[in-house]
Length: 310
Image: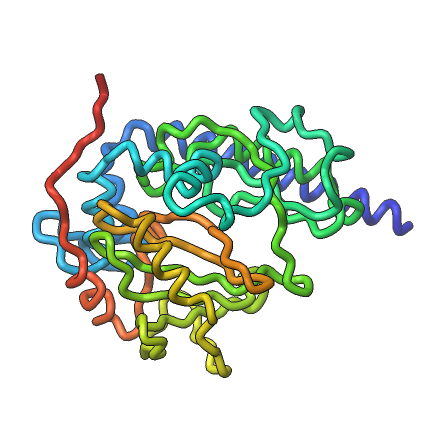
């Protein structure tokens, strides 16, 4: 009876995955025929309930939408690529902040589980949040996990929010060391860098559980704002490595109008997480709403730099 129940659950999960895959393929097919500016205006109105001003953007969200459409430096593609960004980081601040890399694969079929440790994380290099977190290989339904990875590999995250950095990434899968803090992902420190300078740090607690976020200034003052998730009101001490993370963020953000640079503080070491150019797809929900304009006032938009299509 128990085996039948397990098979039924697995069959349902696989069928649900199949439906998601069909929906993504249909969405990508349709999205290719919609101009970028039309699409982002529609999506912005749907998500935030207001018109998008691209002529004279003022708020943080508006300026991120403008950057999507008008600042297309190739360095964005490098830094959004979860494999190539490792070299970008290594060349600028060294490889001591990088988690161990166990493998890089062109397809799911190249992954040999017996060659991997008991815990790790599998990531597609061209997506966002498309990861398989493995704390113990015996606990994973690998048929479902590999089917998920195949679906991720066939998708192009660019079409969802017209985030240019994802458009031209060559899809791969990487296997990295899992930072496991007593069964949870360590606290995530996300530095908001405006025109090459960090101004705020967003701190994520229990990211894959009861997620909460706090926003601090660089003096570790808690700011009275929520961004899509509720605030955490427990005691949060400033990490000893805070200045180290802040300095690294500044180096990595050089010459960029805006980027969020993420780090983990784990076992008294700093680890690089990722670089993100449009947090929440440039549609974060601020409470109070005026923080959208406060952050926007810190971002000076560059001259247009459009994609070279030659």
